[in-house]
Length: 357
Image 1 (cartoon, rainbow, N blue to C red):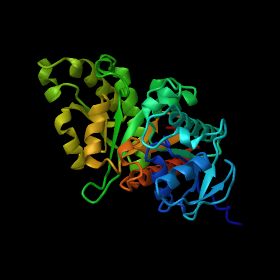
Image 2 (cartoon, helix red, strand yellow):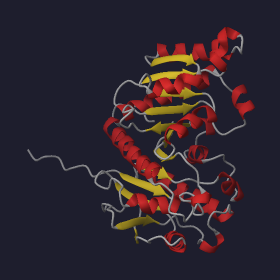
Image 3 (cartoon, rainbow, N blue to C red):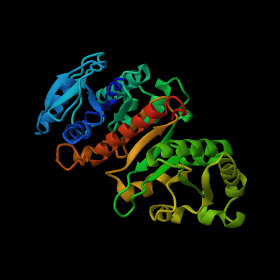
Image 4 (cartoon, one colour):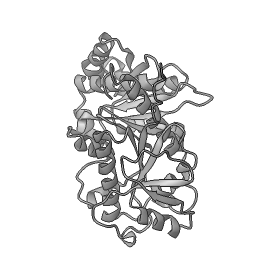
C-alpha cells in the first residue's frame, strides 16, 4: 500500500502593522530566521511601500516576490513572498516615519482584513499581525479599539466574542511558559470593573483552558486573579470576590478545569513564574499586561482566542521612537510566528474532534 502523500506545511500570513512604526523592519528581520521548514510564510503588504519604508530608513531591502493567496510554493529566507492587499494605491510619502497618520492606519487595517479573509476562506491556516497604532486606526475611520475587535467584526462576531491571551514562551528558568487571558480589555477601568460578571470570567477561563491545552499539550493549571487588594480580605476591601469570582471559579472547576482562585494579584504572577500555574485569568487590561511585559516584553506573544481562525501578534506597540534606529527587537515577532505555526498544526490535528479556538 502506498504511503499517504505528505501534508504541506500550513500557510501563515504576516502583516507589518502600521508602516510608520517598527513593523516593516521587524518583518524583514524576522523573515531571515523564521521557521520556514514548518510553515509557508507570506507577508500581506503593499510591496512598493514596504520597499520604500525600508530603504528610507537605511535598512536592507529584501527581494520581494509577489504571490497570490493560493500559491503553493514554500517560503525561504532569501525571497520575501508578498501578497498585495489591493484597493487604492498607497503613497509612501503620506506615511511619514514615526508619525500618526490616517494612511498608516488604513494600510495596517486593510492588511489585517485581507489576511483574515484568506484565513476564513481556508487559503491560510493562521495570521500573525504587526503592531498598529490605535489613534491612526481611528484617523482612518475604523471605530474599533484594536486588532482583537477588528478581527472579531471581520468574523461577523461581537467585540467581546474574542479574548486576548498573552503567551510568554518558556525559557530556562521557567520552561513551562505562561498564558494570560483578560476578562475585559480596551475600555476605561471604571467601566471594565462595572462589567465584571460570572459569565464573563467563565468565558475567559474556558478560552484560556482551551488555548493553553494546545500550547502546553496537557490540562493546564489555571488561576483567577482577585480584583481587590489581598483578595478582598473577606469583604473588608470589596465584595466582588465572593459575589462574582468564587462562583465563576466553582463553575470552571465543575466543567473539569484545574483552576484555583480568586488569588491576590500582587503575588499571583510570582507564583505562576515559579511553576505553580500555566495560565492566569486577569480581570482587566493592566492587571495582565504590566506583569507580562515586565517579565518578557520582547518575547511575549498576543494570541486571540474565540475566533474561527488562528491569530497571534507581538505584545508591544508601534515603537515610533525606535523607527530606523536598528534597536527594534524581532524576537517577539519570531515567537508570534512560532506560536501561530504550533496552533495551526494543533488545529489541523484536532479538526475532526476538537472545538475551535
